[in-house]
Length: 75
Image (cartoon, rainbow, N blue to C red; front, top):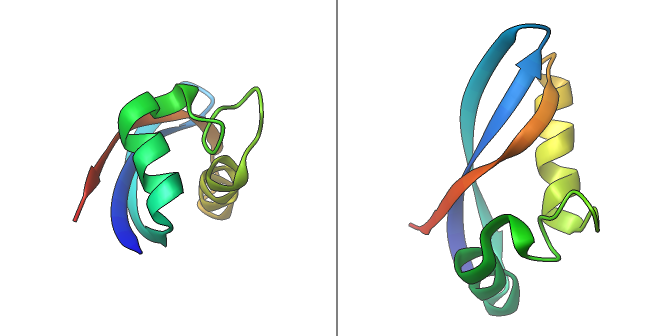
């Protein structure tokens, strides 16, 4: 199990914000996200993988729409 800090963009109209969240995840998910970034099936908007859905819901809870992946690092 790894802890990965993911930074993502959120948008509400013309307002754009960045936020970060640290998520515990399996080695497979962590390696995929750290290596492939937004092309990872776990975070890709095209596939709407498990981590994508977490980030999308985190943005919605803050009154924004998810606007994309910025980066990730192991913490």
